[in-house]
Image 1 (cartoon, helix red, strand yellow):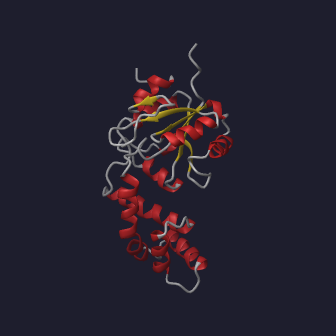
Image 2: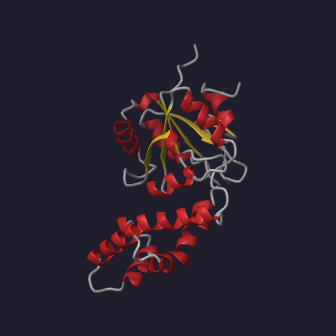
Image 3: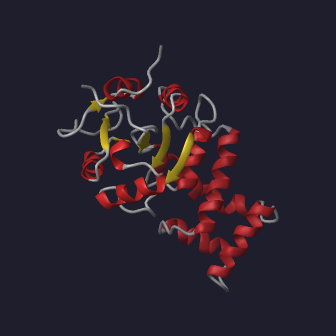
Length: 233
């Protein structure tokens, strides 16, 4: 007998919904090049001014530009930096200078899954702010409202089973009713140990080897077919 469909789908970002190089070779370098100049040019705008006040409070007596540059160079997960990065990326997306952040097959599948009653969540090393922006600027429209939550590694390492237990608690869904999608076998292993269902997304540009312990699919329509999710009519 075929298992009942999951109640929720938890998905990785890089190599699963988004080209693997987009974040590291696109978003982060863009912020490194443009964040300081953009922030200083908009220093009196409400959201920017509030974030800069937090920067000054965190590192008193140091120039805000120097602090922001140091945080970016050392990948410091400072809350005001993440908010300012989000503002810069939102501006860049609005100007059309960052390209398409989501694979073309993802949007139709997510809309079908959401309409079919599945709850959708994302879990990535990319910040929750970055995740929301990526889905908000998909080529096929704003996908962010389809998601019930965005999680980053503040929850825990993606290769530790306990992280997936904590995620399931935060999602209010038993681990056995969650399907986790990732390109990385070690992440799938950890989710599987926690009790989640798993499927590897093996994109042609992902560079991953086929998993030995998990179902494998090449794109989101293939995931639907393999895992019993709503598919195109």
